[in-house]
Length: 483
Image 1: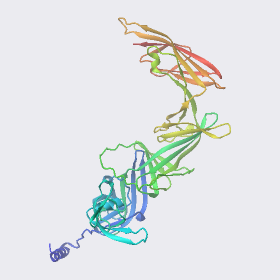
Image 2: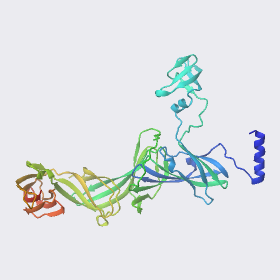
Image 3: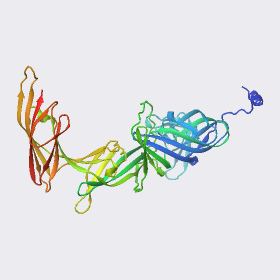
Image 4: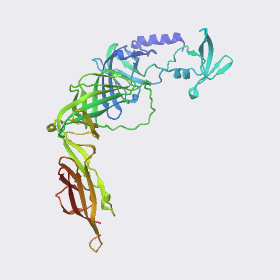
């Protein structure tokens, strides 16, 4: 269409229908300098919801926002722009995620087949010589140049590019074509899901010398590999795992490099408020925090003193003991620390899954590591059992003393009757109590026992055996098991 006719048509439309707004090719940059607030909800499964509120000046009609410095691992299909001010809502017509970032290699690729200038510096005189060159190929990680009448397979100097291609960005950017009913300053929020942000809980306990109380501290470790920094952000944590639909999509790993930095923050003040959310638990940091790119930060979750605990020594049975000829074996009981997550034990808040590490003091008051265990998401009033290791000064010898097969007959498929002996030796200078937990065959029952027992579950009798200091105790029992 000739230019004159185009202008005449626009004038006629303006006279008939009022002003006609045309989308302008230029973009309106929106940077972190325009940010008013940012809040982030981080999930356990390498997922986060970013709510980034910024203030922009928009013309009326159609325009394009270049929302810069978004996460390099954002899921663009989840992006949602909404207005948060008193004006009517803006309407998003199109959005594009630009992850093709500016790098020396990308410039070489974009200028393949085009002319550039190569500057060489004489090693002794320092005089620069400029030659025109054509980039022929960048495949295989190298570069092939035509410089004058010769072919170069490496860069003989530094390359000067005439400009930067328009389709390359210097930072991850989401462009949004939108319609705005009224020109002026607008407060808008961009919400999106992203990978690269995660958190985990860690716990540190100090056990007293009596072994009946511990001081327990909970910590949250936030890790940021999303390719973006979040300064003075409001952080929330979800304990639980929302279902996600697996969708194959290309992975854009564009972290800017550099090693992972770690910053430990010993904030003794209560840091998180907890609430139930759907079938999960939400923890809200009650002050803003800064989480930089490629950084790991620790924040205090809680600090509880004098948590009531109980030590258990457990000798677990072995199913193979009831099959065929079994030789006598020596065992060591496993040490557990048990507590109830309730207010009576000075706890009572939902505990996110994580690792619990325990220390205790030696004779001179120096802290010594005594074991660690992983716990799952633990609700209030739940029992926690921490497996710490194997008892050193306590041992047991288990052997089968009798074994008889009762043959089949008209009313029975036969059975097995067997007797066992468990001898527990205590080499400590104090009395201990050991829980002996056997695992019997299906439908088996105890016919006789030298010590009283309880049934923890079907086929799992439990004996609570007290052994005096530097002494041993023998447990014998007889079992009947139908075949």
